[in-house]
Image 1 (cartoon, rainbow, N blue to C red):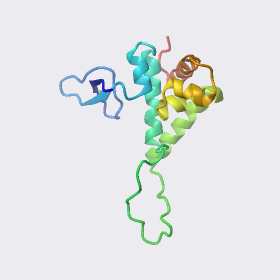
Image 2 (spheres, rainbow, N blue to C red):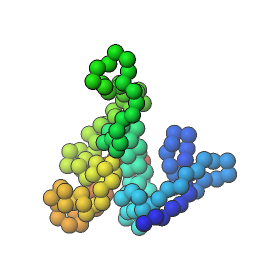
Image 3 (cartoon, rainbow, N blue to C red):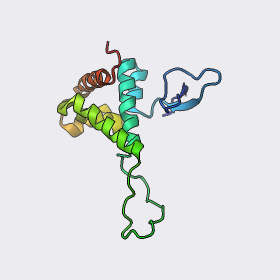
Length: 158
């Protein structure tokens, strides 16, 4: 399913909720793609919760923590045996630190649902099943986790 809308994008690559204004960069976003966007489009998440989740996902992706989808085609550097992994860039290291700090602030019980829904893109029912939780418990726990995350980022929680 596709639910395409135009959104603004700032200099840091953060996607806003409003359409781009004249002279502003824009991006087409599929609202049905992300479980968070799906929940927010139906009024089940606040603006602060959505923003907090998107910030966490952006740090997760910038830190390059996700699994590789394809094979690495870059050449092995001269003098390196066995195709050793290159050192991560400073941006990836900073993003990893921000990601780790956010999950530590949220706490151990709430970080699991955050990672599964926000970073791995699992549906809430899928995350509930994987975590062994009862049906419809995931959305409540996800809301609490996103509230703590929003407080960590200094966003207004309401």
